[in-house]
Each structure stands twice: as structure tokens, then as C-alpha cells.
Image (cartoon, rainbow over all chains, first blue to last red; front, side, top):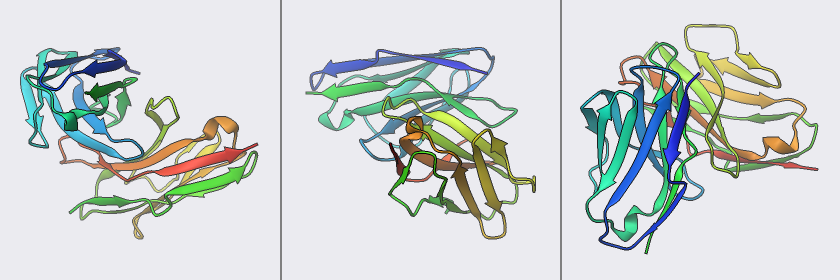
Length: 112
Length: 115
């Protein structure tokens, strides 16, 4: 099975500062990759997904962007953070054969 | 629109009891996959069990089993001999074959196991 690495675990950033969250996948090649955001006590909101290098689809128009520079690397970025970007961000890797998604430990982002 | 409904926002049971979490979904597709995920207080999302819609046999993983009723579009999770470590948010989700591998998520059920 896959292992999803995600960092940092927690991040406190001022409004207007840039953001870069990184996710890497171990144990599989050519995975589908996903970025989710989760508000406290709520379900998951899909932000971006990627089925291959350089192929990014956005689900929600927002202040964030994603990139996939390598097969098993997925990056979530922002040029200028907003207060509303605060939340818990989860990266997931998907297995094309089993349709399962495996999740990283998440990043708790607080924008002050 | 494809949706997932978890009608129980919160449940609590005594340790060692059996508990069933409900999930219904709506899709016009015939081929899809169903999942239950667990999110403990650490917030790590963990896959508990999955079910292929084309399989009639209900999936089982140790103390976790599902009751899949395709015609009723129902996918409940049964936890037997519940343990304190089962305390978590539980999310039901499904994925259709033509969805670009995207999961449709329910809002979650908070399960508390009492000692």
C-alpha cells in the first residue's frame, strides 16, 4: 500500500504571506493525487486533483494553486494567504486499480 | 447530483457493544465503489473498508462489516465489540467509474465509545 508524506504538520502564517505545502507518495508509481481542505468538525472539500505530471484540475475557485512537478510530488501553493485559507489540509494518493485513496497526516494552517 | 447522506451527526455506545452507522447515497451510475473512512482525534484519515457495487457479498474487515443494499442505495457500517480506539469521526464516501477518481463525501458521524 501507499504511504503519503506531508509537511509541515502545523503552520502559522500572516495574511498576505506565501504558502507552500508539500506532499510526496511512497510505494506506488503514477498515482492520482488530491488536495483536500477540512473545516473543524466538517467533511472534506476537494480542492485539486491530478492524474499525471503537469495535469491539475481545480474543483473550487480560490486563492490557492497546485502543481505536480514529479510523478509522486504534489504541491499546494498560494502567493498571498487570506484569513479564510485557515484550515486543515489533507493530501491523498489514489490507486488506479483499487480506487482507494490513502491520506497523509495533514497540515493545520492558521492564517493570522 | 451525486450525494452522500449520513443522517446521524453523533452516536455513543458502551465499550464492547455493537454499533451501526448509516449512509445513503444517490447516483444514477451502476458501477461504483463505496468506502468508509475513520478520522480519530489525530485527524489522520484511515480507510476502514470498501465495497464494489458489482459485488453482492458484503465486505468484512475484522470487527468492521457493511450492509450494502444496492437497490435502496444504502451502505451502513457495523462495528462489533467496539473498543475505545474506535472513537472517531466516520465518513462514508463513494466513487463512480467515470468520475476521474473523485470521491463524494458524506458529512460524517461522530462516534464516541464510552468505557
